[in-house]
Image (cartoon, rainbow, N blue to C red; front, side, top):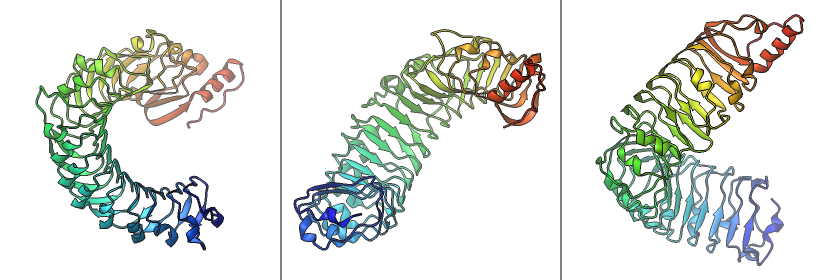
Length: 449
């Protein structure tokens, strides 16, 4: 980094993000020249220790962004002098200390980003002193202990990320006091205990709630009306009871919903499919749902995972908006004809489709012209038979394993995949082989890839 950039006496803001600078920040031989500096961003370079004294001694700095660099060791004690800081970024480095106590006294601080380091220790109850904080991101560190009740004092807080740490214990009910909170992520910790309506009492602004990978139980009354309208909710591996929470009916703005491994059973109620028509992501995998599904509705360009349940009956028809669909490891049965030959609402947008480990049978029919975007399909561990249709041209990958038997037309010769290990078959090689055979030339030896 050239030292001359710090020689401008009237320089107020300096943004040098993504400039591929390497090594330490240069020391200034004339630190009096940069007394006007209030904002400095050196984000996404390859800067290393040490952080120079001229920078640490700037008590009037309001923005310091050293994120995404190669700094290491403890958070520098000299930063304690920067009591005017409003925005402070240290994320994506290799800092290894606890959160220093002096940081909790930064009453002007509005944004604190220290995620993706090697920080450790417990969160002090003094965190309640950061009453101006709006964005607080501590994810992907090694923090431990419980969350202090004083977190409820952060009345300005809008975004809170405690994900991918080692926190344990229960979630404090004081979190329900954060009226301005819009995003809450406590995923991938060791939280436990019961979460009730009291935890959400005043969360009227909440839009995103992610708490995947905690052993928590959600208990609400059947007639509970949440104070929020969520756009995203991920509660994988929670204990939600034996049925889908009825209060989900009130969430008309949901776009992303993930409830895999939550122990829900029974059939999917009709009202739920009204919600799914707005979803771009739905994950209900690894539950005990059963019964038949007539139609899967979805939002635009949606991803749907209903795998590892106990659904039965014929394959459901799907919205033309679905791009990824997983119906594997269930008990769907019967012909695939109505599914692949469904031309309702025009061509399908499906790109990836997993139907493995069901009880599907019969022929694979020549209806693939409806699936122009399909790139990969898994049909393994079913009892499908018949010819490989010529309209499978759009499919780049056919994944076959287990009990998949296909008696092909003469132009494809005779191919059987029967109790075999998983194979990835490139359709382009398949087509090349067909072209060679039809021209009377000797077919090349088939290769697995």
